Length: 186
Image (cartoon, rainbow, N blue to C red; front, side, top):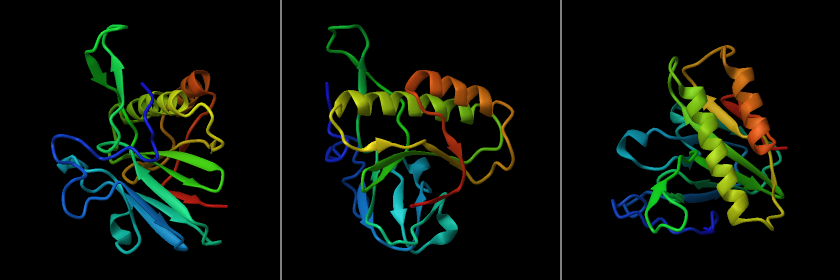
């Protein structure tokens, strides 16, 4: 069943996105801002932050001050797959943190804060499921999906499994990913 990623209401029964101060979508034309996922342990969505640079998981440089929108997906947009084709029973799919969109570009974002473990595989799986669901729900979208970004402030260097995971994602959705804690809006 298609879902509107851009306007999907934050209607989780557990109260997420209904709490005071929790916002699933925010637009900015600031020259610098960040995406923060500091409240993920409270099961709250990632958000666009202009002021608290120490909490930014992903720094966004926007020198031309373009109008950029961040839409949280995890904890804000419920994406399901049927357990059995034709069955009303559904299973929540893995979702990335959110997406940035501006002009005709769309960038999916996943935030991790781990040095070891399966964090890279998990991020790739979230991109696969989220981007495939987006394409199914928005087949006529004029937005050009850019390489998704994995931001992990705790990991430095090249992950030993990075090239393999990039190839799997490329084979699956036609894009690989970028591993970075900074992006520039061009």
